[in-house]
Image 1 (tube, rainbow, N blue to C red):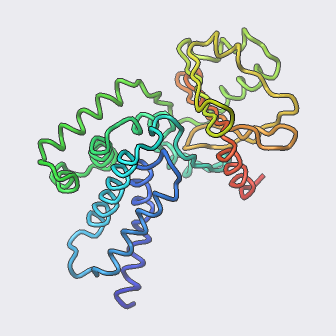
Image 2 (cartoon, rainbow, N blue to C red):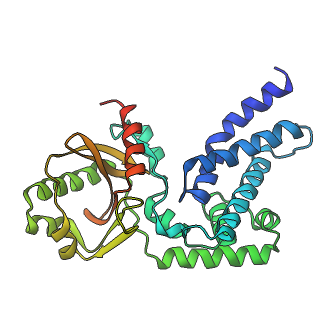
Length: 296
C-alpha cells in the first residue's frame, strides 16, 4: 500500500472519533458543519503527509478542534441565533439494537447536555469538550486556544461548573428499563389518564418544545409534573414510530400519515425527568427521511 492509501485507511479509523469531537462542539446546528470540520482535517493531512506527524490521532484532533473553534467564533461574530435557542441536530438510530450497540450508545451525548454546551463561550466549550470528554491534556488544549495551560484549565473548570449547575439529567444505561417507563407514558397519554401520568413523571420534570420555523415562537418550556401532564395528549390520527435519538428513547409522531413531531425522553430512577419535543417542520421531515431508511 502506498502512503496515500495508508493515510486514507488511518484517517477512516479516526473518522468516528473526529466526528464525535466536532459534533459535541457544533451540535446545535446542521450536522454537515461537523462533517466539514472533519473533511478539512483530511485535506490538511493529505497535503502534509505522515512523515511530519508524530501522533496522527492527536494531530487530527487538533486540526478539527481549531476548525470548530473558528466556526464557533464566526457564529458569535455574525450574531446568529443563540445556540441554546434551538435543539441540537438529532442523531437517529434503530431502537432494536443488540447488546453491543446498546453499550456503545451508553456514552452518547444527550440533547440536554448539548443544549447546555451551546450556552458556553467558544473557548469554554472547546476546553470542556476536549478535556472532559476526550481526555486531552491542558497543554495541548492551550495551544489550540492560544492560551496558557493554566488558562485552559480555568476555562474547562468554569464550563464544568455551568454544566453541573444546569442539572443535566443522567439517565441510566439500561435502555430496556427506560423503554418500559416510556411505554407506560404513551399508554397514559393515549387515555389522557392524568393520575397515571403523575406516577410516571418526575415532580420536577421539564418539557421543552422547539418550534423552529413552525409558528411564531421558537421554544417553550413547561416545568412540573402537573403542568406537563395537563399538556400531554396524543394528536387525533396520531401514530408513533419508536426511535433512539442521541442514544435516548424517542419517537417520530405522525398525524394522518404526515410527520408531525419528534419526542425525546430522559429517564432516571424509573421516572421521566425531561421531554424534548421537536415541532420544527424541517427537522421533523429530516428525521422522517432518516426513519424511512431504517428497518421497520
